[in-house]
Image (cartoon, rainbow, N blue to C red; front, side):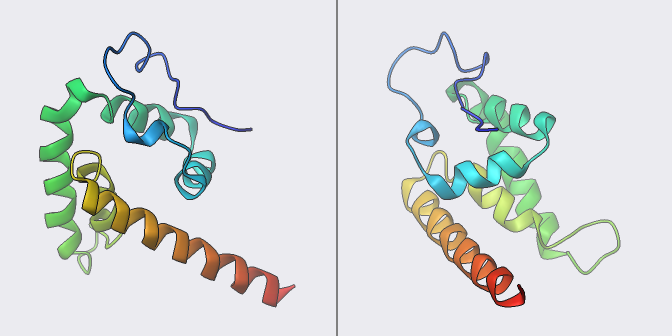
Length: 115
């Protein structure tokens, strides 16, 4: 099922649409693979009004991700935090989407080689 970021939280926004609503197939593929609750949480976090939640959460994820070798934390937190900060800083967003594209190309190549 194709997930659109035209989520109820995003309706009623004024001004330009967030960058995430622009068609990015790699980010869309990642969001499609996420559970419904995670997609809704992401849709809520990318709202312009959620900046005060998004920044501390992103910074906390990246700091905790550095300690990914510890039992509860994980290295996955760093790219998730960078993706959230990328909503406000375009160069970070471009770098994250470029890395996501490379990751998906590698993953697709690896999966096709195994078949």
